[in-house]
Length: 314
Image 1: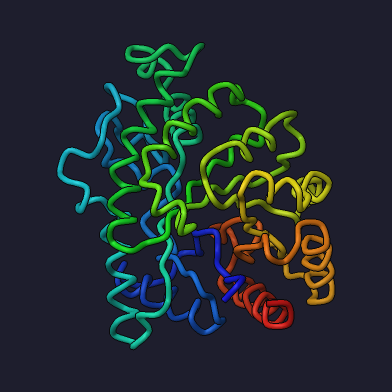
Image 2 (image 1 turned 60 degrees about the horizontal axis):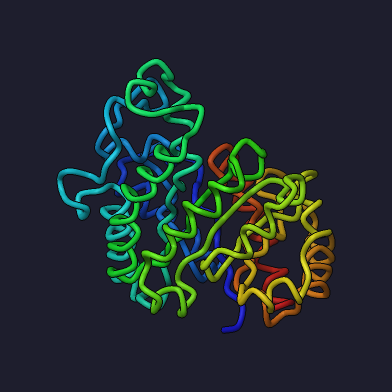
């Protein structure tokens, strides 16, 4: 299959136990023909999921830094992301759908590091320079790396989420240096097989030089949105040459994750992206971002429209 459908990661919380919730979200994605599914991120937010990293502690709905950041102490297989990936795979096996791919979504070092540091700056400043955050970002990157590598070893696809990059609050020099080293630590076989992607929501165009920096990273798939007011600006910077010359494929956020759009609007948006980059350079079709703040009924309507349009264009 040339192009696959996916979701960015999070779903609204389902009632019942964690096992019941993951079971429901897996079946929902199968019902709407999603090729690359997730576990729905039912344990918490994109920040709170990473409490198990050494040096982090709960602080209300977020995490704060209480020592130098390092990998999980209890072994990477105990990490919630790995545990829930295995749950999703077991559900697929029981349904006879071992053919369906599962993606593990991992909050990147810039977004995770920045938010954890700002949650309790007084505590974070005991361990890191918060003016020059280079060491902070590198420590988060290398704490996350064992999780990435283990997920890939187990057969998962991996998506690194860095929403803060489009805010312009991260120095581009750090982006290139930290993420360059991070992705270079991933075996080339996984990168060559396009098993790793980098998702940046928001307006990439709005940060001068960001698109060029992302294209220069050794990550095979760059995922970005096109449907929201800010995300629509990204249509102006993409081109066939940009992706071919940098050996990249595009994950296309071609449908809103927060409002129900009509199928004609979604189809026209996809067609515009395809004309600009070429169908051969598109890897995924997915919503702009996650569904965490959206009702289940609205998610179903979005996924239905996504399925109908995807079947027409893939």
